[in-house]
Structure formats: C-alpha cells, structure tokens
Length: 342
Ligand code: NAD
Ligand code: LMR
Image (cartoon, rainbow, N blue to C red):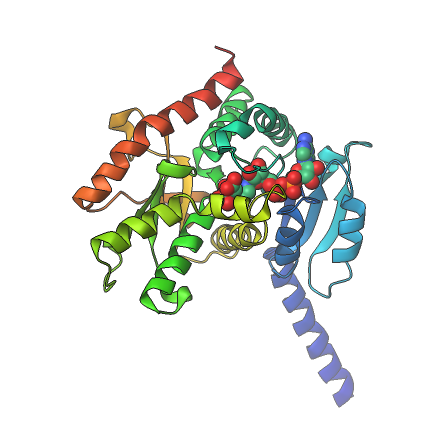
C-alpha cells in the first residue's frame, strides 16, 4: 500500500515534469542542414533540451544526418527532409524557429557580395516557404551576404503580409565571438569574459567593433586598429586558410547555436535580460536612411524586445561608422531591389 502510494506520487511528479518539459518545447528547422555549417549547428542544437523537434532540410543527405543525430540521447526528435514529397513543407510546419545556413560559401578572392547572385534566390525561395508554412516563426539568416539576405526575407514576408520585424534576424554573432577571442589573445584574458560590442553589418568595413565600450581594456591605438581590421576581415582569414574549401563553418556553428539558444531562452523559456547582437530592422541609423542595422538587442517573448543604441563612440569609431554607411546602404538596397525587381 505504502509502495503503491509512493509509486503514485512518483508517477504524478513524473507527469508534472513531463508537462513542464513539453510546455518549454520548440520545433526548430535548419535549412541547409547537410552543409558545412548545417551539420555542426544541428549537432549543437540537438543538445538543447528546449528543442523538442529538430527538423533538417537540404537538397541532399538530410536523412543520413538526421539518422545519425537521432541516436544522441537528448530530448529532440530529429527528422530529415528533402525537396521531394513536400519535404520543405513538412520541415517548416509548426516550426517556431527557422535557421537558414543554405547557400554557397566564399572562395579566396571573393567578397560576400559575390555570393549574391546564387544565394539571393535560395534565400528568397526559402523565405517564401517560411511565409506559407510557418509565418509566425522566428527566422535566423546566416546565408551571405547577410546585409542583403535579411532585407530579402523581410520583403518576401511583406509581400505575404506576414512581416513582423521582431522575428527576422541576421546572425552576426560570429563577429562578437571573434572580437572576444582576438581581444583576449591581446589582453591575455579569459575569452569567455571579454564582452565586446560589435555593430553595423556583416561584411568587411560594415563590421564595426566598439572596443571603447568595454571597460578595463588596455589597448593602444595600434592595437585597436589591428584588432578592428582582424574582426572586420576575420572571415577572410578562414577562407584563405581553407584554400578553396569554403569559409567558416565550425566557429559559425558555435555562434549560430549561441544565438539560437539565446532566442529560445527568451521566447520559450521566458528568461529576461538576454542580449545578443543581431542585424534587424532598426531605427538606430534611420537618419542616414539605413533600415537594417546590427546592435545589441534585448530578446523577449516575441523576439526583438529592445534595440539598444550605439552608445558613445570615439573619433576613430565615428570614422568606422562613416565608412560603413554607404556600403551598408548599397547592400540593403540590393536585397530590396532583388525582390521588387527595380
Ligand atoms: P556549404 O556549401 O557547406 O553548405 C550549404 C548547404 O546549403 C549545402 O548543403 C547545400 O546543399 C544547401 N543548399 C543550397 N541550396 C539550398 C536550398 N535551396 N535549400 C536548402 N539547402 C540548400 O556552405 P556553408 O559553409 O555551410 O555556408 C553556408 C552559408 O553561410 C554561406 O552563404 C556562407 O557565406 C554563410 N556564412 C555566414 C556566416 C555568418 O556569420 N552569417 C558565417 C559563415 C558562413
Ligand atoms: C564569416 O564571417 O566567416 C562568414 O561571413 C563567411 C565568410 O564568407 O567570410
């Protein structure tokens, strides 16, 4: 009798536990999941207990990647989808977060903008599918050139009357991950503790690290210039080292998982005070005619909750901003025109 009572209590507490787990559950779709970023990103996401269903879509190989990941003893169910049999529809239906690393990467000598002709169409078509099958999802764009692909997603969503600026994000996390790592090498400090603000966009001169905003750094002028250049062109270091084999994949997977996990913490787990940099529709540079910009953004239940401003800038940082504006404007307009055809 005592055993039965104890058993009933344990079963009730187990039920209570499973209820709370299923309440904090999210379906996350990765589009481009069989690629260089897609695979390690999916692996890292498989470890997040908030994800109840990880759905993997690519033009090939997702059944294999899904079968492999599905043997890992963490919460998420993993499914693999290909274009046939309405695969994209099944991958996206009920997704609350969609992460998009689909598209071609750079080779040495290329700029991110050189990827536009191939990736713009891929992102437009995937955004169209998101608008149809998961119009309320948060969409995280990794595919380059981010400065143009984010406006493409936004304009496609506007065409389908589903655009919510709180739910479309360009993933610029890798820039702060790099800044943090490079500064810690210079300062001989712990990389995890080096919190560096990076604003702007995600390509060359549009990436603007604001080292002056981290208290306690001991950087002279030439350190600041060298570190700024390294953060702006960190992607090129990897492209060059891979020598035709693509661009950053593993560090990007780390950065993409960090952003996705932060977003899930804010939107699903109700955590407060979560701040990540991200390229979103923003008024920060509205007076310059810039519609999308990356700054630190507080994430909340509905995605973007509070876009932080630029803060105080040094004269050098003002110069960086000045150099970024024309390039950023050009990139954003290019995305807009791709969708509207003028
Ligand atoms: P990859 O070639 O290794 O993988 C891309 C994957 O996308 C491939 O598996 C391909 O089959 C898939 N794909 C292509 N068209 C598709 C479609 N229509 N639907 C679904 N999947 C499709 O490339 P990668 O190294 O993973 O890089 C992917 C993208 O991410 C590139 O554009 C790269 O420039 C960009 N990137 C961005 C950042 C960032 O910080 N935002 C960092 C690194 C790379
Ligand atoms: C990066 O910053 O590593 C990515 O944008 C990929 C690239 O092309 O450099």
